[in-house]
Amino acid sequence: MSSILIIGESGSGKSTSIRNLDPKSTFIINASNKPLPFKGWAKLFGKNILATDNASTISSTIRKIDKENQEITTIVIDDFQAVMTNDYMRNSMEKGFEKFVRLGKGIWEIVTAANNSRNSLKVILMAHSDTDQNGKIKCKTVGKLIDEKISLEGMCTIVFHSKALEGKYVFLTQNDGVSIAKSPMGMFDSQKIENDLDKIIKIIDAYYIGEEPEDTEKDDSKKQDYLDEISLCNDTKAMTYLCKKAKEEFPLDKEFYSILVKAYKSREKSLLEEKGRREFINELDADQRPNSPEIENYEDKHGK
Image (cartoon, rainbow, N blue to C red; front, side, top):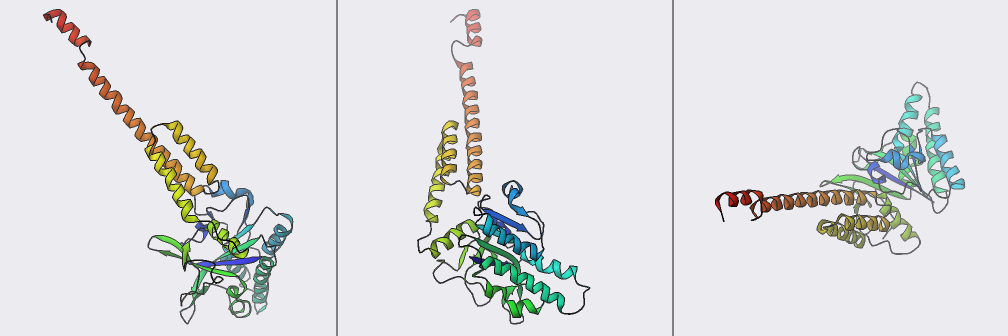
């Protein structure tokens, strides 16, 4: 149905945006064959990862998933830069313009396969950014052929620019005069959005079918309620129930569940410490009671 291009500098949050995608409906093409930058990625996506930087293999994989695996609704190519750079370097000794034509054709076939796929499938291309001679930020490519004849930004439906701003990772959704980010009018409420592809794809899906996206602020409020309840709990059974209920309500939000578990452990530790203090105080109190052994021995010797 559509291709989504995400460009940005290394460490700006491109790969991290994958973290909340559903592993059952997500297929990752690991072109650079590197670990993903979040905990548990291998266990989560291990069955749905293909390590290859071959353009022909990637385009054929997209077409195969499109036709044969309806459960997959998101394909992520991370990073797309490796597909271009590795092919260029492997054939760097080859003379003539032919290698650029072959490379350009391979890139064109990947994006074309993505754009010709079924409505429920989205292909996300992650690549590094580059600044041209006019100061404009665009996708970094190899050779003028891809820039002038193909134009990745032009072929992709949506282009995000990933940035780290004020300690947060965000995506720019529209051109700010420097970045060539773009998205359909009215799709996003803000020029800067959280780098969470799970939320972003839900907004895109809702936009295309003409519905309102999920109320993320309402969800955030519910999540905070769970955390607040756990912080006030005095019973581990009640805390376990809250965690189970929260997981059922937000089954795909691994980041929230991780925060929830930390809150549980923190409160459990506090309860144990409180219990220990109470037992210690009770022991001290017991030493001062009239029937304590020390007092009874004193009374036997000296009388009451």
